[in-house]
Amino acid sequence: RKHDAALSTALQLRNTLPPLSPGTTHETAPPESCEQNPSPGDNWSVAETHLTAARRYRRTRDFDSCERELSSAFALFPRYIAAWEEYAYLALDKGLFAVAMERFGTLFALHPEHPDVLQWLIRATSALNREERQMTADKASGTTCEVLHVGFHMRSAEKEVAVTDPIFRCPTLVDKTNWLGDDGYDDSFSVRQDDGEKTVTVTREEEMGVSMSHGWGMDLRFSCCEVPIPSDVVEEPTPTEGRSSDHFQVLGVSCDHILEELRAAYRAASFRLHPDRVGGSTEEFARVTTAYEC
Image (cartoon, rainbow, N blue to C red; front, side, top):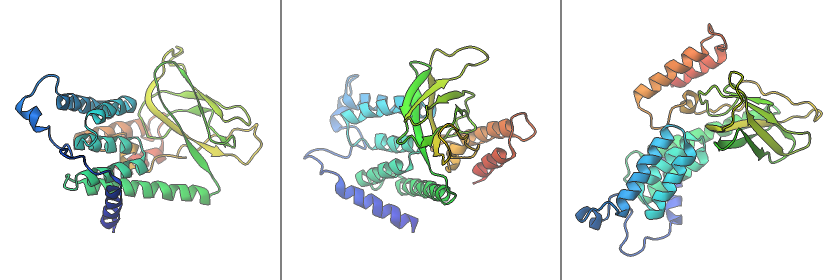
């Protein structure tokens, strides 16, 4: 059933793609002229260099740099199959499951024989369904939240963003206990949101008493929830509120990880969260264990 749904989505996307221009291909391999007469300046080599850099940036979770490199590759070859695959992986690693589903569908539309593309599309669809079920459960419990995407910010220790409606109140402190994506950093952020205001100011906290003059390299996201109480009271979220339902995001590994990376991530997370350690959590320890076993 999931296979049929994924296939239907991919075929619908295929019908939306513009036809290929005469003499062009789906760019699964370098143009014949590049193979016969390779040169340091040929476009295919440049595109491959951008793709290699994009993969490296994604696996170190520098998503903005990854996206820039992919944009450069697409500027040279808009139907570059390997770049479309990386583009879809990027969306999965960022937790943008609907976007990932669309990109894997486009990849299938461009190259239906690409290895495992339908399986990836099914995975993105399943992750989106889990996320939607979680949102439905939140609504049923009377809690309405929205995700505030702060993103990367390297220039300074402070950044201004905004919620869609001042009824959504953000937590006053954000760290690895309540940000989304389960990054393993020890950073923490103070969050200021004046009563009745949409504007939210996020500031990186001091580390060991030292003020931070630079920003952060993680893709920061957290939940801001509707608070049906007087606006002068800011409600802190529970540690599990708004957490990702994707098992690989729970462990902080890329979607195309290898087994050794998965094991290392689990060992690090289970050691950090073990209930016998200071700052450990029985609930969070069980969560990473479940994610690893699944």
